[in-house]
Image (cartoon, rainbow over all chains, first blue to last red):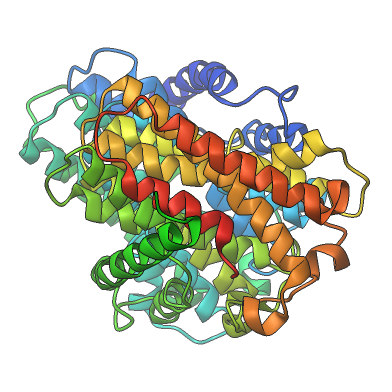
Length: 295
Length: 295
């Protein structure tokens, strides 16, 4: 059996390879800057090409391939998931929400293009994501994705997060926020990939459970890194959670217990894959990467 | 042959009847306020039930019925189109965009709930619209709708409108803004209704042409009403286009020529229906209503 570090390294290389392919597709799927409205297209591209791990496209691809998917529908879904993620970050960073000036080491959309354009760039990426999903021909996958993005998913988590800022909250509420704000879209990426590959209901259930576990682990690790890393390492303001009075795992249970919880979630995610008969090695590696990552 | 006024009256009665059914469905399709995040669900309902002509759901229904559509997919599409329209209005009204305090005689979303909630309510309505469209099972209709809402449709028109504020613009630019910002979603409503009913490509082309003509006519009449009506009659600030330096038809060609253009577009819309063999009487009435309406 491999060490968790060498497992993580495999995932990192896998994700880097997928990211390169995915970025070439983003370029194809995004409107060219020469088309009207040029500045809006520029803003969409600015945020889509500001870096990032491309974890969600990687998960779409991994699930799709694992269940033997064929054809180009996966390319549309990979772009769509990253566009939705980017849309949520752009609106999150707005002055009226988190008021963040930097993201991935670069000025946020509203700092670079102004607030009106940032609102519209977020909207436009969300809408383009659904246009691309329409091209997959799978209406059920669109319904699932939209639901996990809705007020019962990502947007719901974001809203409760905003409402709790500066308030004393319990662990249940942090769990609610993290599951919805982060895990829902990670779950969606896996489920959409599996659905496009034609996976059966039992397999989809397994991969969703895996997604929920690594999704929550991902956010707990994010909370931990916000405390233990420097701004330079993160590419965004370190310590900003504390400054904003954000509800985080370490602020409630401490760093050590947060690390334990991430480790437990890792074990749960591996267990969720148990019933699957296909090769799940890449998902196991990705889980290892998620809990060992340092940025 | 009936007078244009009596035609318009038929449409008004038809739209009022459809609006009642549609609003009952909105209530079913919108999340209940008791569900978390409660305040966001309240904000979504506030804007969806702030009144309005429900023109877009009416057009979805009219096109669906005209082409012999059966089943409940139309209900989802009717709600989806109104949600998208409402989402665009909420974001339009934001302080960083049009900065409007009133809409349909009530405080705008950000005045009532704050800016963060207004941004999220718009996002949530857009996403819910696509979730409902997913339930229709028609991925192609989703692609079409998203495209007409994208930077090549409604969002593109909105963005150019923002960029042109306070600048001297020509008629081509006003046409561009009006076609994209207003006509695109009206065209989408008709096309989605027709697609869900299984209409053939030639019929869809005809109804799209009709939609583009009444869509542009609708916006020109809006521009005219902004000048000749009082705030009380409109339920929103009359004269606000001039105040904001908005590009409008009357500001470029004058009131009389704007009325003439609306009348021409009415004729064009009727002509677009010529090739259709089904009963187009309700669409003819709606066109008459659009150019004779006083609010």
